[in-house]
Image (cartoon, rainbow over all chains, first blue to last red; front, side, top):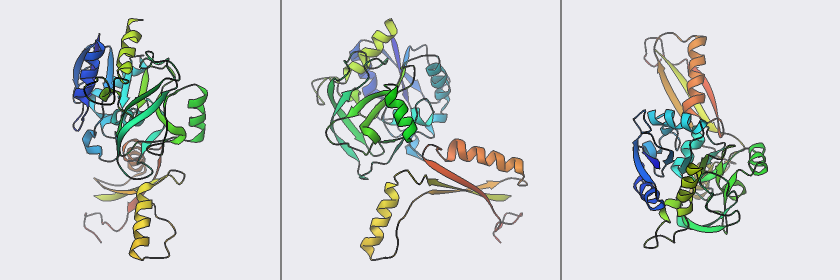
Length: 222
Length: 90
């Protein structure tokens, strides 16, 4: 089972994401933003960071990277795609997910261990959890405020497409405490917090994040 | 050459933390009488050849595809008449 991790200029968490994939039992494959090639992977992770320096808008330039043409086509075909932080921003800019991420309402960069509730455990990336599970993973963002119009928010809630919600304090002003969402099909997930930083006991707040990466393995076996 | 200006602004209903920060700074500096500040972006496109309706339609497409995110931003396209056909500022 091969899971590709895209490196854009300015990606930061690509190596951690590769490591999380390996710890979950899959083979990580490095993908390059400038290639029109997914190297026969079965799933793709768009990692966190500041692709293209976050110029223009977060994710706005990365959306048009050559590799994204392939990622968007594969996502429409049902391939599991997980966007973490900057990857979530890229998925929204690519219109694979609705809404957008804007600057944190309090205007400060936030970096902390964040409690989340998994609301949808039926996506390709969350099936290792149970709905209602509470997990702790690191969160670090300056532009993590999820926004969408009321119609879209109601649609997301009505269709159970809110994947994870912030517990305790809302860290960035995200509407309805939304930390992550999925598409209609459940193969594309965008998440602002960082499960790839919570996969080993040695560092980070625990191993609560590993489930995202084991989930996709069972999704691919099905 | 002609200059086409694209202004991009956060939609009125979208929170604009940067504008709020600027507004707060005005207060601290003692500049009164400003009720609100919203911060956007201005793009100046130096366009080759004549500005036609077709070219403007293309630039609107650029504004909608790349320069703005229609989910959170509005854009406005206008030709800057102060730039002469020879390319120098009037």
